[in-house]
Image 1 (cartoon, rainbow, N blue to C red):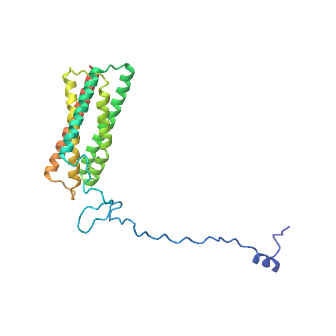
Image 2 (cartoon, rainbow, N blue to C red):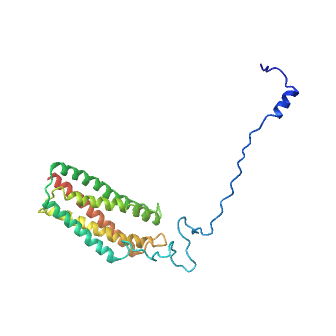
Image 3 (cartoon, rainbow, N blue to C red):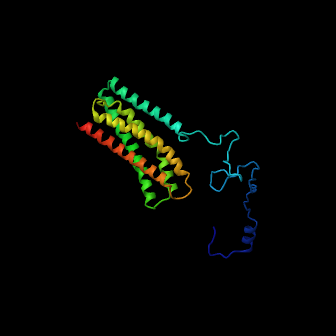
Length: 241
């Protein structure tokens, strides 16, 4: 038995010196070598370096210099507006020729209210971001980027409102209902042209906008708010009467 009060002897020192020591035989891995064909990125992370001649960089040889997008030209916006008008007209036709049972009516009402929260809520947040920029508490880039990210919920909510509204048995003979449909159509066209507006604003290099863009943005926001609130009020009025 080991005596804790016993002083260490020479034999103990020899035993400790000859005790085996565990060593790891792993060798350090060599540092990874940089590939010669690695993509060189520019100043901003995720952005290819711009060539010295000022041309637009491309990641692929067959990539077009200007990809086709919805907000590239007024012709595409006009085509999208025609398709949107056809969608609204189809919803109005369905509301006349389709018989809705109480269960489907309740489900459509739920989707209608959820779409209102999604679409109108996105519009209010986008306008709030612009007001924050106007008050000097954010940059123009931050406001435009935030509003751009809200496009998907806004358009999803607007499409849900039109689709579900067709199953709520609207009275198309009512003047208010026709005004509401007109507001929805104006909202759609106003949102489509706002895509070009946001693209023009994004190209601004400074924190201020040209007077023409400022008036354009103010008119777009005003039309949006007037049509949204009018449609909401008419929907509430029709539900109560």
